[in-house]
Length: 421
Image 1: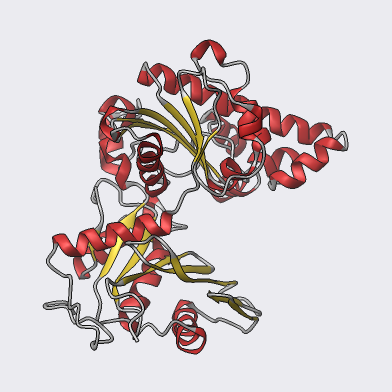
Image 2: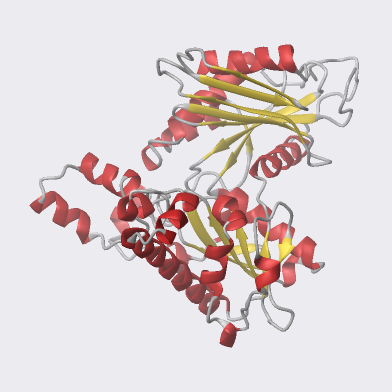
């Protein structure tokens, strides 16, 4: 029986040692099934698959992404729903870096794969495993179109003044050095949800979106169009994050190489994996950080102070960029779940028309919630992000625009797509 006659989308996020996936109903928005494959290439892999009230977890070795995706497809058959009955109309893939090449989603073909591969120097930790997942998924699911959705695409609208680093223009051009921005799928989805929640046209709204997870980024969005963002050439720049430093004087890198004997790889490891909250307090989980602070841990308190200071600095900067701010929205793991971070970020900003209502702000938010005081001119919201749904919907829109809708014949388990290899 075909459970989703209008079609479902399998969304795949292939990382260096993990594969996250969801089967999504792009119309209703529900996650039909979801799961994760972790510790790919290690001695003991972890595979978890959830469908309805059933969750199956296994700890078998997963030697590579090919084996991981084959395991996933097997679990769909075993636990459900069978993909042959879910009317999968597309597979949507998250790709971190689209450079200047991709300003929106694209249907995967050999040319697209070659271009993503050519962008790997800009995201050496992300694009290669993204590409591996795409290649394997195309082999295992050859009868549906595959669509790539890029973290950077939403920010291709940044004005030159925001996107340009003040370095030698020839060097920048030759090596693709500019601000690209990341988490774009989340920022685009959340800013659209804000317009829906407020019942106002997206084109009328000036927004600041704060995507606060282990990775963290801020954006300024004018009328649905991104005009500034905190991440840059890579996802390292900007806010203080779980293990990443965010903004830092570039000469620190030179100083450490000259005087501490650190190699390029050493500095890379320091700034990406041993900095941020982890570097300051030894802990990058906010629940643990708050417990340490309650116990009087000075390093944890300082880590929170640094995090909040940077966050407030970006809020202030984006108020200046936008001139008028209609909405500030918190999203992602920390933004949705940590009322202390939200309260500290907005404290004392009443002269800017920004103020929280303590009762509304209290606790975790699983649905979109306005948490600002009634009198405040800027609405402050918490909006859960849903990057998988955003990718699924972009995938559907992309195949429709390309004329690759396939067939709606429910007797056909895998929609045939004319001209798609």
